[in-house]
Image 1 (spheres, rainbow, N blue to C red):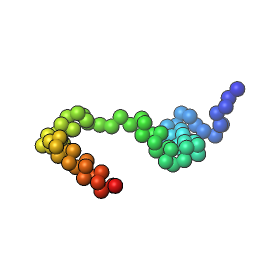
Image 2: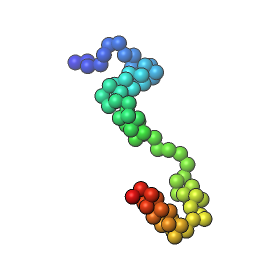
Image 3: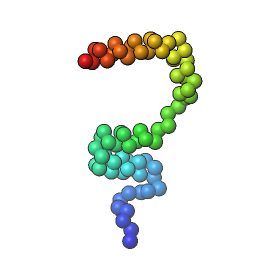
Image 4: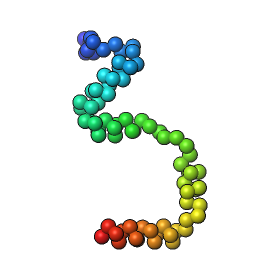
Length: 75
């Protein structure tokens, strides 16, 4: 039994991508579709090296101070 719709050309990447996106949006909505697709993006770069560069000049005391400041603002 063939359950595939006869109007979709599964050999054409553009057509299958459109049909897939349409099915995702129909079932999950736009936000759900975006969350679903984001699961397959591994990102780029090296998080560990980038984090070390970003945090190189920040002390733990500064981090704690900033967290407390933000916490106080949200209270």
